[in-house]
Picture 1 (cartoon, rainbow, N blue to C red):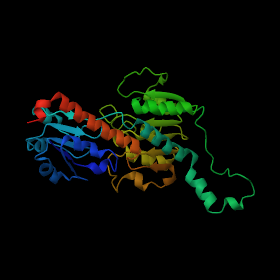
Picture 2: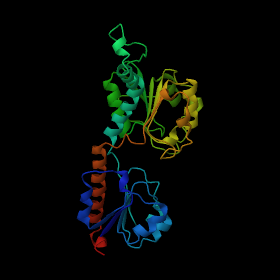
Picture 3: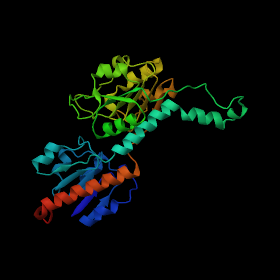
Picture 4: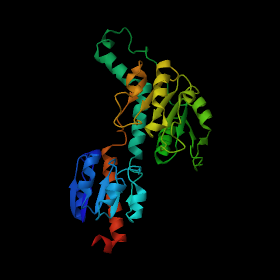
Length: 318
């Protein structure tokens, strides 16, 4: 069997990539452009992709293709109808990055809330050495304890974030865009009430018909001027131009963003051009990517291949 991993650069240097070699010949490509896809998968039995698009043309021109593995949760980069037409399973992975995203969520939040870069610079500049008191009180911050922590999307990541927020002493509430109720000890609110009453709003929902452009300028106006917004879900959930406007106008106190409508971020993205840059913390869709998370991701892709082989022993021998 021949396995082709089209964009191994998206998982980085993880210690278990060698596990794919148990299945046969493996070709690792750091990245693959659209024009290179057909040539690279022409004789592949199994294709692994994270973000490289496999459209109907590519699938049709890969006669040996038996399995498509997506090294991510989202499947929108694969034409599933074309795969189904040829009885090619499309297997994704889930629940590999909850701890990493939850940790990254609070990294963004605490960066904004406690403003460590400011205090670090204050000390390193020598200003603290010249102080006439033991502390510095000119950049105030508030505690999470006793505040309302609103979560949009209470899936596996949202629940992990809720547990941490609860440990900080915050009151956790949530909004379900799909209307699903969860068996959790948290109050479910309408979106409007969650935005109006929360001190922190943290987004952990998928991008779908319920969440696209969910957070607009009008909805940001509902939030407290002291509130912080974190988007660790998908970029298209928050209207980026509206968020940039709201931050510059002081509609909310700050935002932490890990995901963008276009990735990598466009140089024209309004979030790169706000006047009050101190109100915004951004990371390059990276908070999911702890070493443990990426290692677990590969393990789950390997498990998908193992499961496919067990279920299709005769097929894979052809």
